[in-house]
Every structure is written in structure tokens, then in C-alpha cells.
Image (cartoon, rainbow over all chains, first blue to last red; front, side, top):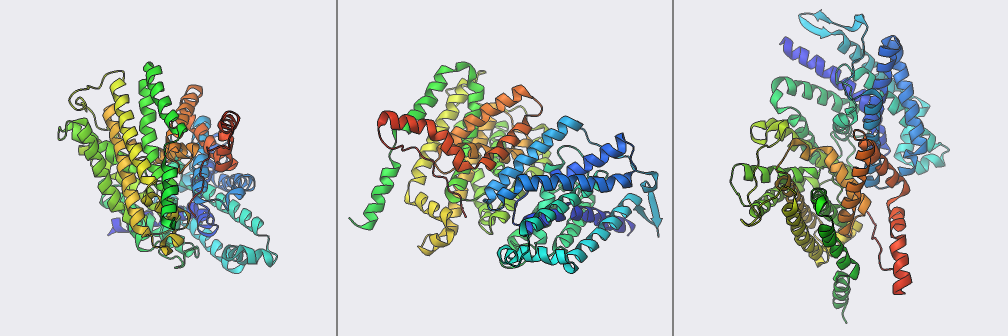
Length: 289
Length: 343
């Protein structure tokens, strides 16, 4: 029974992490219809920024986290303005080729600068070890992840649903032409959203170094996971990707625990079955965009 | 002349062998005789060309984007390896065919998953299938040798006559023969009414369906055929290198393949062949500059190609040949790349 709770807890933490990593992609891929396979590269950037600040410059972990966000978002907005923006109207094939090219470049560049071995971020002592909660061992680090990611999710949902910017974004996504006709600066909204998504990915990358492992091949290894979150979750709201990441996180942790030899086999099978069953995702709109 | 005769006439005109095509194959044969010390890398190019040809069949002619074409390459590679290792089909040509058939069966079964849904779903499903097979190959390491790969494969002489030699001469001519035969087959297919209907589907599936083309059946057929080609390419890989390892399924392999095809251009069959030559040369150059970080330059090439735009790039590449043709043949340039993607 306690193992079940531990698996559930770890799975939720893992899923929350995946959500923060992938929710930027939900916007670019799901809403702007841009196949951005390079999303993991922004996450990796955040992770390495955090690692360098904490390990080499001696910054406290919690001060390095916002900076990971800022640096990834800055790189994101620079790339969006200079490169991505020209490709919104291109075919999916072009978008795939472009973003795969970016992934390859980032992998090699990070390998060159930081070396190819896995990197660990030195954690503050307060985050190490476990708390005993009615006999269930709860990792402090994972608890912190759940708290941070949970708050972020709530904030995102509020921003999207309640603020003026949220309604602008939703309008721009639903019908860019009508939205720009109403005076909404659609490219600006997209650029800002793209940058914010990249920043979240960077934050997720910094948080995930401890759990997923951080090495130059991070964008390639976890690309499929981000894509699963978005395609399975659908793109009509952020609730879909959120549920999908929780499912994926719990499924992956449980799969590794109960059928360790089958590895990622379970996840891929489930993904293919779901996509065949509902090509627009579990929680997606039925009409193809 | 009825409309049907007219269409048939133009199709036959299109399908005629042009001088440039003959020149291309003569050049290939000349390379084979001119550089006897480079058989190994040239064999590598031929295998890649065949693999790219298989992707061109679905991407260039049917407009199906696949991120997991390495799946069939891997199946062909492991099939050929296992057939030779356990002595089930010791004769290489027969084994090649059997490995191709195994890939065909898998291609046929997965084609039902791929034809559903739009581009994005297709990308995900093809990618998922390749990753799934990689995970399977890793799981059943007692059969596949896990991350060490299949070891100790010993190839029998081809047709019992030509033994594989150290310098790769036999392997090279073996690959060249297979590539040429399969190329002829592909050329025949894409110029047939079947091939024409595929192009109609690529340009507009809805309209194709409206004029009575069974879209799904055609897509299943071409996807299956493409899997056969990829399987043969994989089997050639195993037979000429006596090696099959897990990375035959890897994502990088599928991504490299797309780069090959994009360099060469899609939809005229020679794209994969030319792209394979250019890609291998680029790879050689980058690997001599920075052995460890050549991936960066490959990525840069991809980004630049997309930003410049593929049609424009091919116009640049064809500027010189077209100039020569205009100057010396005194007529309008005939070399042009039909460059249109699916919707």
C-alpha cells in the first residue's frame, strides 16, 4: 500500500514537471500549429544556466531558478523574432527540418561547451532526504516540485482565463485575422507567449536536472515525452496537457516499477493507441484545425 | 484523340529516358571504376541512397511526412542479420528479399495507423513506431544482442559465386546492382497511372478522392512499398558491414534521412541519390574539421536550407546546368525540380 502511494506521489511529481516542461509546447504546437521539436533545447538551456550558476558561481538554488527562466525566455524571444516567425506559414515538413536542425546544433554546442557527461545541480540541504508522512516516504525535492509546479499551473490557468492578455491570446489563436482586425497585435502576443513558454521550459529544465538527468542529449531523449503531452492532451485548454502529463508521469513511474524490463514500451504503445483512437488528443476539440 | 489517349501520351512522354538520366548512371558506373580505393564509403552512399529513395516514395510522391522511417531500415537490418547468423537463409540475395518482405509486412500492418489523422498525428505515430521497435530490440536483447548489437555475422558468397572481400568491391557492386534494379522498379511505378494518382493525392487528397481515386488504399500501397525499400536498404547495411546495432532504429537516423532527401530535392527519384552523395561528403568534411561535433554543422545545414527555402536552393543548384544546356543545346532548360509539398 505504501509503495502504491510512493509511486503515485513520484508519478504526480514527475507529471507536474513534464507539464511545466511541455506547456510552452502546447501553445506553439497545439495553438499556433507550429511543430517545434526543439522545445527540449530551451529546457536544457535553463538546466545548464542553473547548473553553472549554482555549481560554479555559488548562487543559491532558489535564486538561480528565476534566472534559468529569464535566460531561456530571452533566447526564446530572440529566436522567435529572428527565425521562427518566418516559418509559421511554412509546411510542417519545413518546420520539422528546421527544429531538428536547431536540436542538433544545441546538442553539439552544449557538448562542446559543457562536456558530454551528466551534470548534477548542488541542492540546498533543506531539499535533500525524505519526510515521513503516515509511513509513506516523501522526497522533499519532489514535494517542492509539486508545490512549485502546482502553483504555476494555477497561475497559468488564471492568466489564461481571467486576464486581458489571456483573452487576447485565446482570440489570436482562435482566429488570427479577426483578432488583428480587432486591434490585437497578434505577432506580439505570439512572441510573448512563445518566450513565456520557453522560460517555463527553462525553469522545468532546471528543476528536472535532479530527476530526469541533464546531459547534452536531453532535447532528443525527452522530445517524444513533450510531444506526447501535447498530442495526447489536445490543445483546447491547458487542462488537457495537464491531465496528459499527470497520466504520463504516473504511467511511466508505475511502468518502471512494475514492469521494469518493458521500459518505455508501455508509454509508446499507449500513445499510439490513443492517437489512433482520438487523433486530436484525449481532451482535444473534435474538429481538426 | 480522346482525353484518355492524350493523358497516356503525355505520361509516356514523361516516362521516356532522358539523356541526363543516362549520363547520371554512366557517371555512377564511372565512379565505381575510377575510385577503387573508396569502395567502402561509396557503398555507404549507395545504401543511404536506397534508403532515401524509399522515403522519397512516400514523402515526394504521396506527401506523407514520416519521422520514423528508420523503423523499417532497422527491421530489414536485424532480419538480414538474424537470417545470416542462425543460417536460416544463408544465401545473401534470397535473405535480402526475405528481409525486405518482413519489413513489407510490418509496413503494411503499420500503414493503417499512419493513414489516419493529419500531419502531426502521422509524425507522432511514425516516430512512436520507430521508438517502440527500438525499445523492443533493447528488451529482447537475447535475440538482438541488446546494445552490443548482433555480432559474429558471417556472410556467405552472393549466389554462391562472389564472396565478400575485405576492400568492399563485391559489396559495392552488389549494392549498386540492387539499387539500380529497385530504382528501375520505382521509376516504372511512379510513371504508371498508379504513380500519377499518388501525385494527385499529394497535391490535394480531397480532390483526388472526388475524381474517384481510392486515397486510403493508394496510401497503404505506397507506404508498404516504401517499407520494402527501406527494409532492403537495412538488409544491405547488415550484409555489407556484417553488423546490426540498436542505432539502426534511432531518431537521428530518420532525421539524417530527411536531410538527405531535402538536400537532393523530393519528388523526382534522383533527389535521394544526389542527396546521399552530398550528405556523405558534407559528413566527411565536418568529421575531419570537428570529429566530435559534426552534428552541429549538420544541424546548421538543416536550418539554413529551411530558411533559404528549398525551391530557391534548387534553383541556385540548377542554375549552372541550365546555363550549359541553354548555351550548347540552344533550347530552353529542361532540368527542373518539381517541388511541391502536400498541403
